[in-house]
Image (cartoon, rainbow over all chains, first blue to last red; front, side, top):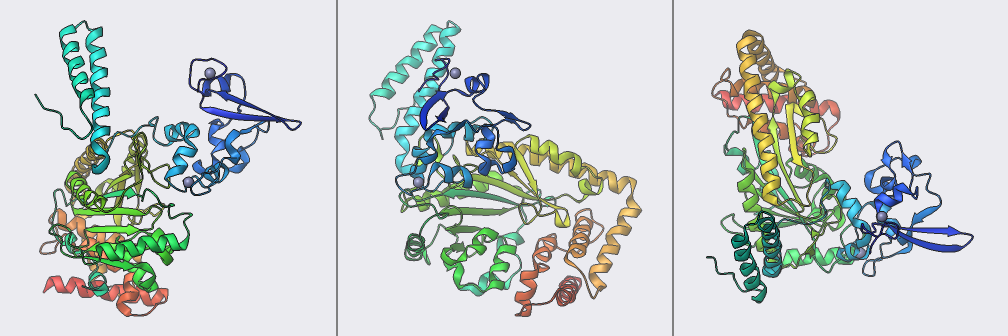
Length: 180
Length: 355
Ligand SMILES: [Zn+2]
Ligand SMILES: [Zn+2]
């Protein structure tokens, strides 16, 4: 989902504004949320942290100043384990694997904060589901270096990589890539 | 094999071996957090679900052989006495969290106590692997072997984007906590640790005392571990930690050299006073004992004290903890009783070496 203000960045904040029982939803990026004052700044900085006070062990007294906008998915609950989004932010813990899917739209800011900007796993893959994921990762890496070669006008090398990507894409999952 | 095996010795069999840089790095540990795909995480799971997991472990892994590590033993924490639980925590076989949430928790231990798999901790599985000295890479590859072996029977909660799914967002991705226990007496004496700790924190690493979060550095022993688990490969995480640990080892060696050069007689005096205290005191508190043990260990490392094994620090640090003392006495003890027993156990142990 793209940000409804700038239409450039992805919407990472989903806010609900309730005025006289009328509910309006907003989907904005962090930047626009700040620009338009949808979320407030505390002494600790950007108040998104406050929304997740449970997770970041923040003093509840700092969780003020955004009375107008509540986190939209407060009532959202995991279909598998029943954990609500509210409970998730209070506990700072997931209830089951499905919670990750259920709260997916709100996880990137949390992970970025906790893992110094990272949101995507780069490590070990379970053996039994491995090869398909491995292939995707390889293709992504080849694509990146191919772009690099194109920019450097090293077209021969870029073409080599293009062929590698093609042959990988034609392989079925589970088939080994012939090293050459 | 029975519970007694794990209770009889203060140090695990693997600790008696020497590892690389073991004059400074006491041990290396790898911990991997894993969960079952289709089960609610222990934090909010129902007791029946957790019992299912324990039964599965009992049936699948009791007495199982894992490579050449001998038979594995599965224990339900609820079957341990309060003192036994304390001893397990003091030996780092289980976490304080597991001991506190004992009703539906278990642990699968290898005979050498090198592999400890906690069941129904904050996550369904916490795989721990220990090696003596500075051997993080080796520990990682051995922990992966355990992980692969478990995976033959267990489908893990895993997502392509997010990696291994864990109860706490701080563990997601690799689920990896790599750590080392370091004995840093010279850096502490010269007040360099207070300067170095914030710098280490800046690199995304955590510095703690020997018994984990919030505990102070008893006996000048520090635990250093990674904090970030997502967006970096396990190898990169381990290498980043390794490079900081290597630098600390280097700095500790330099500080020891400077101390022996510039303060030789004062240092020697301090070490032998501590040695004397351990050899002769009749009442000793754990804090004083830890400080003296650290001095004696430094004395062994730099050659002032001969014919004493380096592992004496590892062993006595566990022996002097309240749980182990009470296990030894076979009853609970008052504070004063503990201080008396502690002093007598230390004397006994040191005389054993002197004969
Ligand atoms: Zn925007
Ligand atoms: Zn859930």
